[in-house]
Length: 186
Image (cartoon, rainbow, N blue to C red; front, side):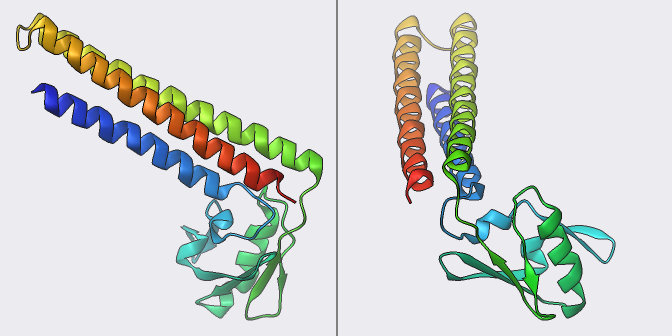
């Protein structure tokens, strides 16, 4: 394995941790409706646990409303029940064809809880990035021990990995700051 392969792998895995954080942030409620809010909901689709997005279309017609339209009309009640029993705090209403999910206005206390949750998610991402750095550094040390690379090459690669780590941790902080502003915006 070459130094280039190690640094590319580290770069790819750190970027993956950042993308995972951004996907997780989409599931956090802000004051606006977002179809990704329902990503965690699984509905019993003819005996098979199925993600809601695979059993219905989810639309956002206005900032405080989600409309869920099941592809199979017999699934309206099970989908409505799944949304209601989820821990998201939504109270869906059905007309027999579509399910309307009003997004309640967040209280100040709830917003602060969501910010704490976002900070926890960001810390997990930072930990994942540091873990990737450690894995990369260990690979380089093994390569040095196996006489595949020189000490100078190892030092340059370690410095490069540290720069990548710093860059990705700064990006996590920027994404967190943006999400915090979204949550706290009235």
